[in-house]
Length: 88
Image (cartoon, rainbow, N blue to C red; front, top):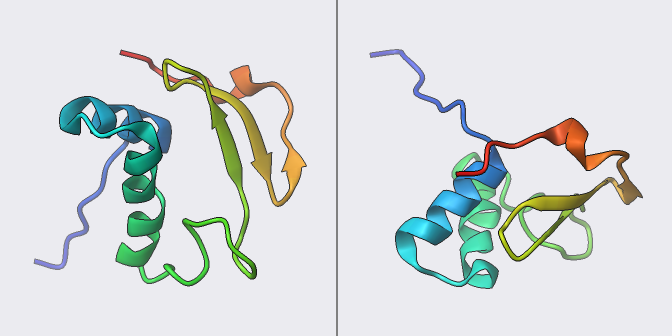
């Protein structure tokens, strides 16, 4: 059909789920939910990796894989609680 499938989950939730389901260490799993996702939508040359010439949004995670700090376009965003997550 001409339908579009999607999801209502957010990247932090997908990341935690991927780590939990696969048992991969976070530093390996992050590539799957960032770079591979960018490639899948045709943006692999622009997003998903920290490298010269790419968009550089960053997230700092804690040991429980909760978002603690966020930088968008090089500037740190304010209160992380504004980006509340459901942690299972």
